[in-house]
Length: 317
Length: 282
Image 1 (cartoon, rainbow over the protein chains, first blue to last red):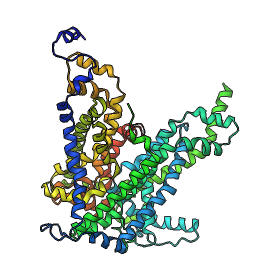
Image 2 (cartoon, rainbow over the protein chains, first blue to last red; image 1 turned 90 degrees about the vertical axis):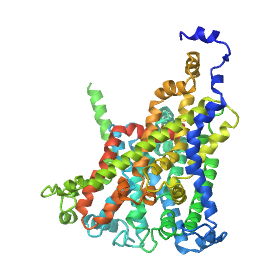
Image 3 (spheres, rainbow over the protein chains, first blue to last red; image 1 turned 180 degrees about the vertical axis):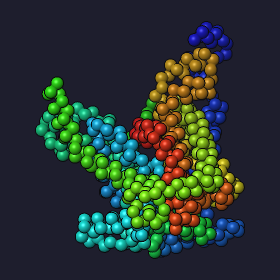
């Protein structure tokens, strides 16, 4: 502060709002440069290049010269395993939104804001999120292993609970492999969504719910008409993260089933890895990447446009 | 006094159903991890026949074997290098950019900001194959620096969004004071803004660390040389090699998850606020 007088007498320096000093193009460019280089090179450019490569038949070794137009895309949509992979991702998304998220919401409300010891439970519920997918896959491969007693326990438990359930090996049975993966996904990710809901609940003033109950609403009505509507923003965000998370799932599926048996648990990322990378068809793989990208992009734009406008639109100032 | 304590008792009793459910869910969460921890102390035969029980004799062999593997320590080291590099690079470039978006005004600012936000619209996994092609062209395959650059690039959008929100929330008077004292933009960012942004930076860094530490798909494509394997890739390799020896596999994954679990217990607050505060209030 002792410099104020200096500043005032210094000739040539602009007065007024401090920020005017900052609005030098050079500073702006220098500060943006590192992020811009990284972002353009490694986030935007690969997708643009993939769109170009996807028009070629290319094994990744020779020059890029065998132009085949949209044939990769046509072949992809005619390829039964691709359509299966797409279906499986949709199944995972639907199950996540209808089973995993309500479970997370229920638990968030349950341990919610007042239960003594809630921090302890929160720590445990969130723990699987930070354990790597590779380790998670191995843990659960063991549990689903038919040689292991826990597999029997799960089988007999479900056998009693569900009349139509047929006991058998989980990861080796085409009718069960995807369910097994969904169980693991739920184990690993419900805590993430629960954390989001708990944070959302903390932002709801408890007085509003108390007012509803004073007005004669029972707890179900309070939940239905007060709590959940006020959580809408969080729920939209949670669904968004869940959908993108389902689309990008690779590690768990690849390590537990490699997409099998007989494509029964193939998802889009494992399909891309198998038919694009492992089999040296980088042109074809690029077209899968482009489709994956477009699915995410269209979903994100439509979803954010409809439900989440406020989140990313930024503050107007 | 007696009224109070009976009220407390009634309150606790009314929580009983909640505790029952919370404890059951906790057991489901902990159970697979516990099997692995105990399994590491068993022989494979015992692990299969009585996975739930405590080991009959505590076999130290499996854990000792893994701790004696130079590949395990090397993978730990490689993962640490990639994670540190990713966090430093991403935090550095994202803070500079977020500063521009938060505290300066110029034409096209919002347009450029929106370009950076495209990164939020798709996850890195969908771009892995194109990234592999690009890294090959740039001769970044088999190179830990390649992983750092790519992983940092994919952290930028989220970090810029969160930091911009945080930088904006700090009062303008701070800025005026810096310039009156003769400081420039970098002085302001480095000595004023960043020290005040501790919580936001910690939350960002914690998320980036988890992201980088657990990344499998990118190293799987980009690394051929076993010397460079990161921990998840090494875990996958060990899984392939020791499928017949589950007890040893359990010892490996327990030791492999230990750093992340310790980190989580220490930094839970930051991870959680990165996910919730940032995402909701950015």
